[in-house]
Structure formats: C-alpha cells, structure tokens
Image (cartoon, rainbow, N blue to C red; front, side, top):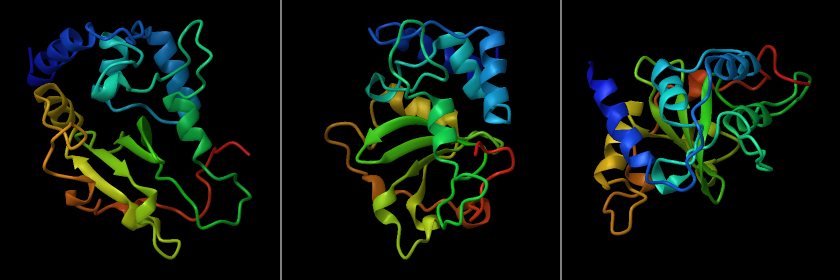
Length: 193
C-alpha cells in the first residue's frame, strides 16, 4: 500500500460521515467523463471518484460530482463546469481557462478550487476572479496545495484556510507560476462551439 492509498482510506472514512456523499463511479462512467473533457483525470483524482464517491465530501462536503448523480437535478458537475469555462472556438476574447485544470469545488463568490490534471502531483489551484487586473487572468490563479494529496491531508486535519479561525487567508497563497503559459486567448482544440 502506498501513501496515497492510505490517504484514500482516511478520506473514504471521513467521507462516509457525509449525508451528501454520492456513490462511486464505475470505470465506464469515468471513461465517458474523460472523453467529454478531452483528457484523462489525474490518477489520484480519478481514484477519489472511483473509490470514495462521485462528490459530496471534502471541504464543506462540497466536492463537485464528476458527472450528474442519478436522480439529481444539479447540473453543476466537474465536466459541465470545465466545458462551460472554455470559450467557443470562434470567440474573440481575452478570457480563457487552462486546459486540464478541472473545477472541483465552488467556494462561492466565483472562487473555485481546481485540480491541474496535467501536473505531476495534481496541484490544487484556487481561481479568484477578484484578483483579475486589466484582463490578465494570470494574477487570479493561486496554489492552494502543491498536490491533491496535500490538499486532502489539510482538509482531514481541519487546518485549511477555509476553516473557521484559520490564520492563513486566500491571498497568503503563492501565485501559480504556470498560469501565464497555460492560459490561452483562444479556445482549446475540441472545445464545444
């Protein structure tokens, strides 16, 4: 058993306490979601959805479902949130969203926690649109945790910036160094029109 498997077990035990926990996804459901996204989820994020549940756990019991939960009217899923953030292929806009960075939690006030599925450790980023200046999105991306494992461990310990009484705030986070190079002014290949 590796360190992430141990962490996954602890996450599953804590998630089981949530009344919002959704059933885990099947391999077929995960593959269908990845096909819609146009890339594979980071293996650690995929393991959460396959082994713990399809959302409803994590900070504030609010990890988004990857795909719609059976019987749910909620259309706020990771897949839809990601696809909705991509500008249409023919858009002439300064707005962009980094490819492979999937929203996983909506903090409210347009702030979003997102996982960089293209990074080695699945860095968890915070998109804070109030930090956008002069149509430059790179200043609105912060590193919440260097890895998904670190982010989950902080949640389990109850020491996240979002906890009552937490000392470190959002703007104590470092800027995401790769933001400028990963943001694009045109739509991503394969983005819906």
